[in-house]
Image (cartoon, rainbow, N blue to C red; front, side, top):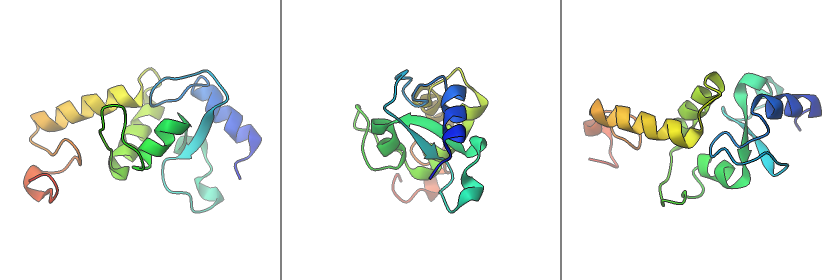
Length: 122
């Protein structure tokens, strides 16, 4: 279980809002471990981010978003780490930016890999 002081620090850093969609401020936020939780060593502010319940399920690749899009976990992790370094942007906006960059570079927009190597998107 996350220590209340750490939870409060993460929520304060994230301005009591979901970092994926910007919803908030409110109490209906979860604290998400960006790298999979395998003990207290992962309970550090740099590995934690505030997400609303809907987007928490989305970044776990459990549910599609409103546009019926899905995200894969390694891409979600990449976006979420970017958000900690860039507090003024939402995950949704950063994911759009990255997908456009990947497309320009000839990478798979969904998986951030060389298109010929992507088994799902070839």
